[in-house]
Image (cartoon, rainbow, N blue to C red; front, side, top):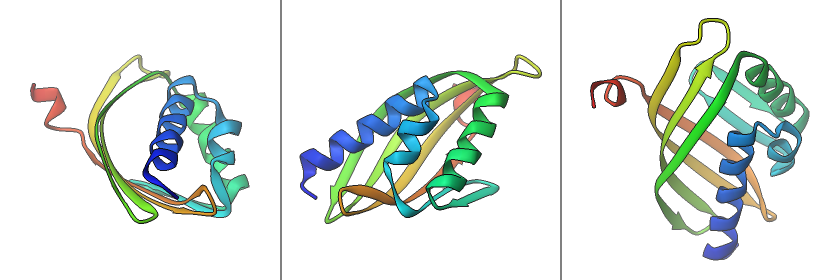
Length: 123
């Protein structure tokens, strides 16, 4: 994939997180794609869709600001600022987030997130 295609795919993923469009986000992944966030690992489009649907039931009001994207050969590192609201408590969660993304066949094959939930709170 070229840099522009990678950039576009990352922007689509971001927009899908914000709108909580579970189907669109899951379809950005390869059939055997992997989405890993702290405490969760979903493999395959259907498991990714299920995991995202559960997330959508528990959280709302997602906000994401991309800070930077570093692109290499079929891979990227994304740094973004993330917020959501926990529906059960109304608590606003904030995190600095880094995602390492691998691409294959113009789709995401692996998405691995690393969170810092302490620093954003202290800003």
